[in-house]
Image (cartoon, rainbow, N blue to C red; front, side, top):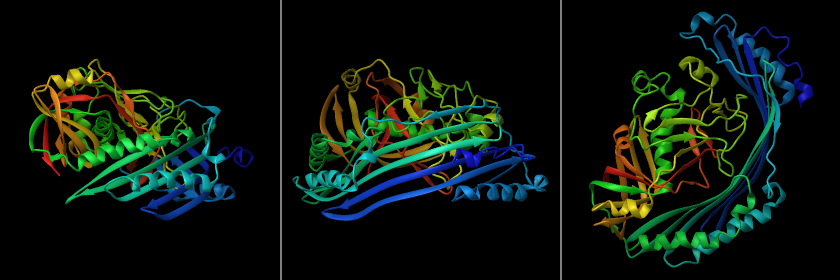
Length: 457
């Protein structure tokens, strides 16, 4: 493959060009109740080109490597003479030339297991869930994805790298009398496949919580102090703040660009938020992004103050800020866009019992159940929680909805736990067309927020 791409950009009169070529393998197996709904094993290869000239950018995808030079010529011709039509010239931040190879070598690799073995694995978890009391419906999906990639650019970079991940995710529904509740479960192998094995006890613990949810009382609406567990806190920081740290989101939004200036106080001085692709055994671990840039640890909020942003080479030039290595594409048909790697709230000093004992009348809220953000406004569902009275955790509650304004909520974080934990399975949807990226991780410790608006679902 490299021989075909040798001197690919040497005869061009372009300001810049890059090419990413991929070979992608994916398996997906899906059960609904007792029924096997889908078994799919697929392979796709192809490439993506970007060229820049006279401030104009053009992109294109191609299927076969032999078509790459033709696609490049067509792109170069398409932008010729269009310089006067653009409102703003595209510029790129200067970057180092890199020649490297970096491949994942797990002890247990899904490529070494048959389709039948993978089917049996997810089938056994699905069957176990259906055997439990009050269970009326299940959905379980197994998925793995392997991508071998080569990146070259006109500056001389040549990088070979890969991505590997596997996961099982599901939803288990239970009914008792007229009450129906759902619990989501997931196990991740990033990259170790055997992390999906022998998880029966973990599944049963989740189903035990689901069965308790059937007898729980609906939460009472109002404004309360809350303790948010690690799983929900990680979703909150990803969705409510993380996307606003992606420079392409704020680049053309004057209001947020003005508000999110480096040095702006955003939250409590105990709050630090980091994006780090270097954390092993997490969904967002990688060494190079799809723009050929080294993965960087970026502190986004440092003791309450905005200190960093996630960038492409274009946005780093536009903001005059350092490169971060966060340009990523789901597969070969997509142009890379700015994505979080592993975003997390840094660990604090408080333990959970100390946090709970500090509340006279509030709630301990657990696990995300969907939600949405619009600018700085957020709404999240939670699977379940517990009433806190006089510093004691009491009975379970359900049907929970949290809402608020991001920056006010960040200011109200008054305690942060000493128990940072990363989710086994991440995932993020972004872009137009939408790119659903499983290689996006998130983590958090427990956090205490002094006031959150709570409504029933």
